[in-house]
Structures are given as structure tokens and as C-alpha cells.
Image (tube, rainbow, N blue to C red; front, side, top):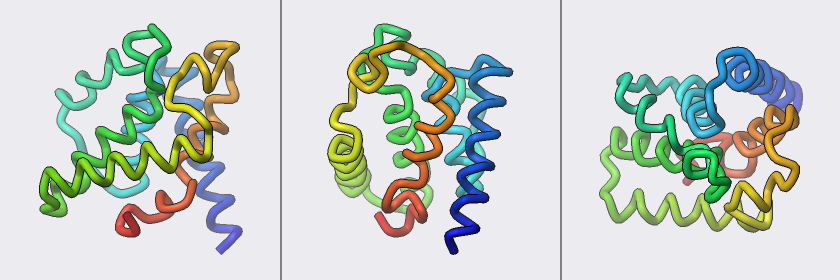
Length: 139
């Protein structure tokens, strides 16, 4: 089990590195794409375009783009699972609450005071593998 988690972590780091550093995809879009790959969710091009300005509110460094991408994924994934809007809102709240407990903020400027650095790959991988994100059905 630990070996599988390590392999998954390495795969996520490779995806994030390629998306973020080689393809210039923002953190929200990278999170959305990685979660889609992990849980076999396909998106329309409009969904990917909708995430274009979500990296800390267009670079303003407000809400973390990794959080924004994850919240988009929760809405898409659980709508496909026929969860109600109220259930999806509750799941988004739970995610934000757990994220805040683990990382102490939802704000990009507080999470990465030094700005955008290559550690984003490790941060993204850690977020994707935290707690219930080992399986979205655990939410």
C-alpha cells in the first residue's frame, strides 16, 4: 500500500511538473487535470478554460488555485455521482475545512509567501493525497 502511494505521489509530481513548468498551466487547472486523471474524469474544453483565471484570483494571490481546482473537481465529480447541490456544497466546505486544518490557510499569499516556486509539485501532490483524497468516495 505504501509503495502504491509513493508511486502515485511520483506520478502526480511528474504531471504537475509537466503541466505547471513545461506547459505553463496554472495551479488551479493543474489540480483539476490531475484529479481528472486520478479519478478518470473527462472535462469539456470550457471547463479547462473556466479555470484559466483561478490561480489565486488571476494572480492576485487570493484563494489558492489548488483549492479552487479541487473545488471545481468536487462539483463535477459528485454531480456525475448524482449528489444534490446541498451535498456538493457540504463536500466543498469539508474539503476547505480539512485543507485549512492541514495547511493553516486557503490564501495563496499565506501558503506561498515567496510566490510561485518549484515546490508547487510537492505541495500539489501532498494535497491530492491528503486524507480523503485517496478516494473521493470517502467524502
